[in-house]
Amino acid sequence: MDSRTSDRDVRTPLRSTAENGLKIVIVGGFGVGKTTMVRSVSEIRPLSTEETMTRAGVGIDDAAGVQDKTTTTVAFDFGRISLNDEMVLYLFGAPGQERFWFLWDQLFAGTLGAVVLVDTRRLADSWYAIDRLEHHGTPFIVARNDFGGPQHTLEQVRDALDLSPEVPLVDCDARSRDSSKAVLIALVEHLHALSSARETTP
Amino acid sequence: MSPRLDDEDPDRLYTVTGGRSRVDAGAVDLVTLIVSESEPSTGMQSEHVRILTLCRRPTAVVEISADLGMPVSVVKILLCDLLDTGAVTARHPSVTRVSSSPGVHPSLPDPELLKQVLVGLQNL
Ligand SMILES: Nc1nc2c(ncn2[C@@H]2O[C@H](COP(=O)(O)OP(=O)(O)OP(=O)(O)O)[C@@H](O)[C@H]2O)c(=O)[nH]1
Ligand SMILES: [Mg+2]
Image 1 (cartoon, rainbow over the protein chains, first blue to last red):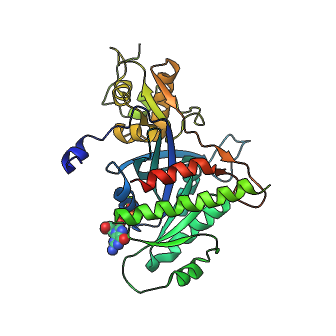
Image 2: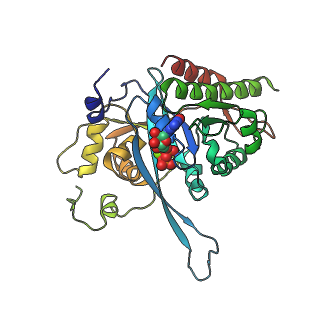
Image 3: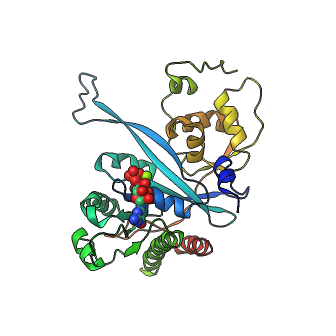
């Protein structure tokens, strides 16, 4: 492999045959390890960018021609994995706070699925994200990023998150490439199971 | 020919996009891959030159955004001109979905595509 420095200066370009970009979103509360997970599995150093969106606020007053608009800027980071000659998977790390979701709904439309990263010391941070994904019908799994601290069983975590039994819940260490890779595989296996079931259902 | 840009402009993003603020956002996705079809020419605005140089190999919209240090929506507007003139082409994401049934996820990628993703991940 290239050395760290050259890796950082010149990003490996995609193959010229690359034609199909796919998305997976890693969502979670502040400092839960989103960027760390992207970095662990990405073939490029995570890049960051931002998007600005304006939406009409509540109380639009058409008669007066006055619109109450709010502009939100959201920063997110991403990495990528070339899956084969044609397919490239982009991984997005997205903060899960409530105020960002109208952006995610647009930016991440068409995503294959999502990983909700949770820290057991701050489980409440992920309630909103889980709710939103369920509501939106985006398939997801939950990954507990192990920061040490008090031990909880996965069952306890599932209860605390009020997670339905069919949503996979796995343990991970976002700093480990193998562990992060296993999380992505668990998600795609879950998606595959859901999708296969759908296909065989009349 | 595009007017020369002034880097000192107080509202740079307004300038680079020629004041336009809307774009057919549905057409270009974050992960649409952009490919240059021609070399930069003299008189092109600097952002267009950078995009054409970057996209000699396929490059996702979001990567262009990160490299240019500009919001995704601005990059999409910049790309519109280049797409219109055929200076770049777009390879749009293609995810076949299985039909939805009531009460479950509205749509899911088809199993064959997911299988390919799985194999790609396992080979990492
Ligand atoms: N012990 C431990 N530390 C971790 C793990 N994953 C991440 N960290 C550390 O936690 C800190 C936050 O990780 P980030 O990856 O920056 O988290 P983030 O979710 O991207 O944070 P924001 O983007 O700021 O919301 C870093 O110092 C990481 O090194 C883990 O699995 N175990
Ligand atoms: Mg981060």
